Image (tube, rainbow, N blue to C red; front, side):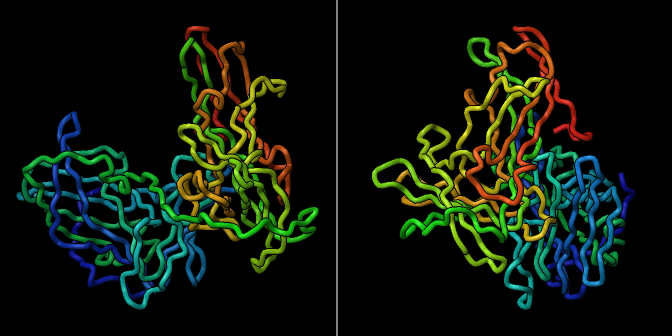
Length: 479
């Protein structure tokens, strides 16, 4: 653990007004409550700490050329880009060991010291001074969960804030006895050097009181601070006036989406009723093109069916045409209850000779930007609106639905339901491949169809009573 450091105080009134950033606190005196974890007590800390950008944004872009290549992260400044030390960005999810938190008791003895990671893409970021820009272009939240993310952008708009984490990097809760404490927080030296911060701008001193009473911990407490994704709901349903005038084919030139499949991930095997064995997996199709995939559905009178159309745009973003793209169907099943666009993707299980032995029953989808896949490509949409099934899939009485897959974003479906996961009960042990195939019927126009398919190797073993599953990593990625 890091050695003890000296700390100085800083409050919001001192928010950054120069080209650098500052670590600030929302208040000098902090109260914390203890809660029962079911296995002892833990303290719920909310230190109110924020990083505030100065006259220019704090922007870092991290990417890897392929899954076999290392992650390279660069600080973007007006004077040029600066490459971060490798230890600071070992994945695409957070900046590592950004702050050190030191807690001392009333006698001045250190009782807890730990590191915290940092996601600059705060969900509740706001401007902190009147002359700051009115809007922030940066994503709301850092990538999480998908091991095959290719690139991300971390950013704090000039004059805006981003909350820092209060949770140790190992994520384990800890307890503090009721009483008075002093807390010192500092941005760690590698980041001080990278951001050209003085010790004063990088440190905060707080007074902490831990309450004697115990409280029930609500299920949502600390959801942000533990890095969990939080849905951002925007209603984008609309009532189309009429079906579009369509082309016989897509325009010969102009921006297009480019659908690509990531390797299957989150793969597991489970035993269900009647001694059935299923392989479950997550599958992601993302858009690497120079145009969003935009599909509008127009409901047929009196039917749970919509006619779907793909729209096209020129380089200036003007709509230049549309072509039929199949249908959308209302799915009334529990867990669905929304409109599905048909033939977006297909999932197959292949033998070692690449011949199909099983096919997922999942063939219709509600498009949503669930995953950041590569926000470093040109025109990537850092702040998509339709981020989950509640924001873009329509309702039972909808007369029209718009479904969008934005540039740089992916749509992930987890296949863990009977009929969607692969039934491997009767399959012999051996090597198989999970195939993820985007746009299988070719109903959508895109830049290329040569990159629509991915395969992921799995190995089935064990016995009829106890099947086993081995999933070899992809270039060292075990997800």
